[in-house]
Image 1 (tube, rainbow, N blue to C red):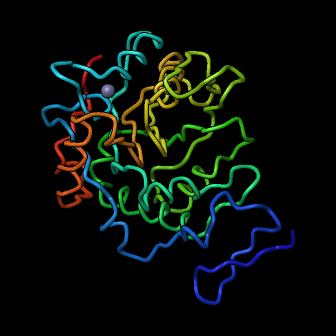
Image 2 (image 1 turned 180 degrees about the vertical axis):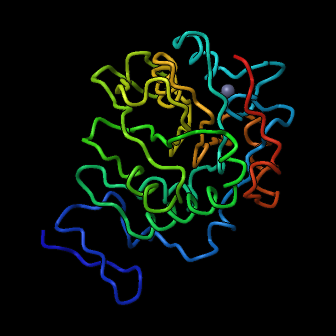
Length: 273
Ligand SMILES: [Zn+2]
């Protein structure tokens, strides 16, 4: 197949270099215009009743902690890192598409509009919370690598471009060959290079569903005495069809106005597992 130009930004053809795109751009075009992020992001619930205080997923009945967090804690030394999501999302949605296509997958290239959307979200969240984040005292931002692709990870590149100093992206968290999957946390799935040992960092993950990947990464960092000041997540996935509780929490949050300031969201970051 020859290079295939597709619709998108007027006058700027998108060239996939002969690679097969992972989505059908005619059936489901990726779009992003400035301001779309305000309309499409969904306010996370924080510590509202009926929500897991660690991962902000919906709780069934009178649980103190959700099933995923219990599984992660059981496999990872008993500790779960509380997350600070920028937004919730469900499938289908523009945020889901942006999070899926902002990076290449080794075969198909990144979608430029999806990349612009995720870059804009990162830039706004970190700029609007700059004072609060600086008080965390972290001296680096570390990306949870999603695959065993050679570094740098596309999210690390994007974060370097869009998040202002003094918070700088640090490498040194790497996937090992140990298995890792949805609902399958693994204490051996990540390794940490020496320059991160004993440091204080903030961790950034793009998508959080069961948390197996981000929590396994957090575990590897804790094992070398790296302090995690905060675990930020761009999109915390909800499946409203999973349960009545999930549906109710997601519907309630979607009806609320989005708020960029984490301080105004009353985030609790110091929960003990
Ligand atoms: Zn949870």
